[in-house]
Length: 335
Image (cartoon, rainbow, N blue to C red; front, side, top):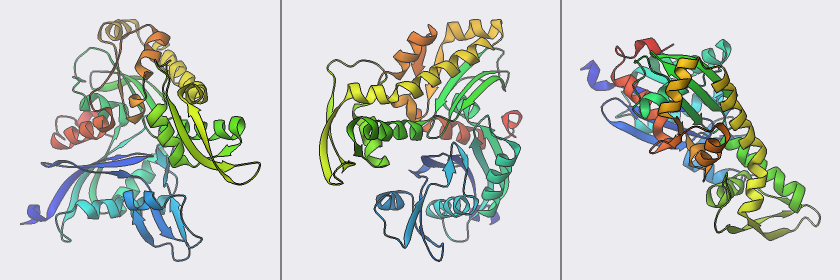
C-alpha cells in the first residue's frame, strides 16, 4: 500500500525551464522556472507558465522571481516553493510522497551550491536525493554508452550555463563549465538594442527575437522582424525593424566564448580520448543547441564533426530519468 502512495522523480532544475520525469511515466512536466509571489506576504501566487504570463507585467504588490541563476539556486526559499509547487502539479493525489529524487546539477557547482539543491529537494518532500552532473545526464539521455573505455564529448547549452565534458568509463575526464547560456544570450540582445537603437525591450521580447531570427552563421536569405519597445530618448513606445544580421552581431561575443571553452576542453583532453572525439564527433544538447547554425559555427571553430542531438531540450531530463529507472546500474555517476 505504501508504494501506491509514493513516487520516484527525476528533475532537470534549469535556470529557464524545469522538467520533471516520473518513474514508469516519463516526462510529465516542462514549465518555466519562475514564481510570482505576493510582495508583502511572500506567498506564492502562481508558478510556471502562469507566472511567466505575469512577468514584466506586474504591479507593486506582485513580484516575479527566477530563483535559479547561472544554473544554481540564487533564492533558496523561492526555489523550495517552486519545486514543491511543481511537484504538486504532477502528484497522483495529496497523499503521494516522493521516495527518491534525482536532480541534475552543473559540473562546475560548488559544495555549498550542491547543499542548497539537496536541501531544497528535501524540504520539498523528497526522502532520498541523488545529484548527477548535467553533461553526464545529457550523454545518457542521447543514448551514449558512458561505461565503455571510449571518449564521448558533450556540449550542453542550457539557460544559465554551458557544460562541456569528455566522458569515459562512467566518469567525467575533462570538464569546462561557463556561466553563459540562453539567458545571457537574451541579455545580449537587450543590451544591443539599448546601445544601437536607443530602444528598451523586455527579456520575453529578446527571447522571441532569438528564437525567430537568431543565428550563429549567415542566413540565406537574412530575416527581419518588427520589434516593439520604449524609445529611450522620447520615452514613447516605438516599433522598429531588426534583421538577423543585427541579432547575430549581438550574440557574437557570447558564442565566441562558448567556442573558446570547447577549445580549452579539447586542449586538456588526453590524446587517446581526443582521437575518439575526432572519430565520433561532438554532441550538442540543451535549448541553446536549437539556435540556428550553432553546430556549423562550432564545426568551423574546432574543425571536428559536430552534431545536434534529437530533441536537445529534453536530453538532460531523459538521461536523469534513465538513471532514476536504473539507480543500481548508474550508482557510479551519482553524487
